[in-house]
Image (cartoon, rainbow, N blue to C red):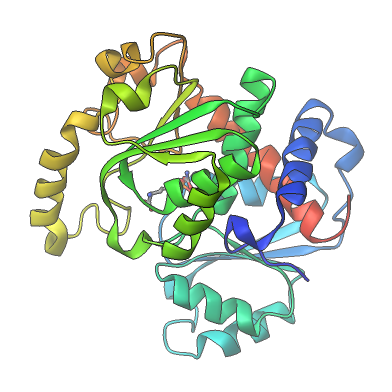
Amino acid sequence: MTDFLSVRDISADDFSTIVDLAIEIKRDPAPWSDKLKGKTLGMIFQKTSTRTRFSFEAGMTQLGGHAIFAQAQHTQIGIADMTDEGKVISRYVDLIMARMVANRDLVALAEGSEVPVINGCDERYHPAQALTDLVTIKEALGRTEDIKIVYVGIANNVSNSLSMASVYSKARFVLCVPEFDPPAVDEEQLDILQASGRYEQIDDLAAAMKDADVVYTDTWINMEYFDDPVFAEEKKRRIKTFKPYQVNEALLKLSGRRTLVMHCLPAHKGYEVNKTVLYHPDSVVFDQAENRLHAQKALMLWLLGEC
Ligand code: CP
Ligand code: NVA
């Protein structure tokens, strides 16, 4: 049984198999329409979501299965032992997808679960997003090998998963950030990335952006803190610190070539990306969002051994 709590839970070959399956399912969904008949996905959310919730739920329906949505606050998860709850839920369902705040809670849930668990985005990783991202790049550019992917803004859960997924896909990944989101620091993964020869951290924006095939950014403040009054001062500080890293027309020009714009969404226009660039002809953000659906279907089929 394999979990997908981080990209590193599966091999590079398996990652690439799932990317290709997602592209195949997008092209021709019909043969897969009853592959998960009678199967149930349990979805647990401690945080809000649009894309992750809709794409997993619709994906399960399109594969002939069923999804149960539970907002964690309306379950006993807050008062019960996380590992026990994982064990119990797994006795009812075939697969679990959980969006928890703390990575340690997700790990505890997965420890108890007797079925595969997918990370739906915690403070450290967002692997299902990274899968979609590589699907989108392969779809748009025809390959992932040697594609230069530049991530600007704050190093966080999204960049952690994207960097590993990029290296798995033989792309080149450049991180251009002034800071890491503290809970997302993963020294063990950084060592692996650095040893790959496909990962660089470059401080200078112009040098980082040169010849970029893809520029990717994400919110400077994670969803659970965005409107939290306790985080208000830190939010102000981050806006000031990260403003020079906004993806806008001037930053795009630094690449000297056509550069795809990517963002996992939701975007905060005027902060990490401006409106013109978000809706630029080279922006693939809405295809990227759509691809969550095809990628989740491929991931669920693969984890359940149905492909
Ligand atoms: N990109 C992403 O995970 O979106 P949601 O937060 O809406 O699920
Ligand atoms: N870094 C963002 C990703 C949103 C999908 C967050 O955690 O809110």
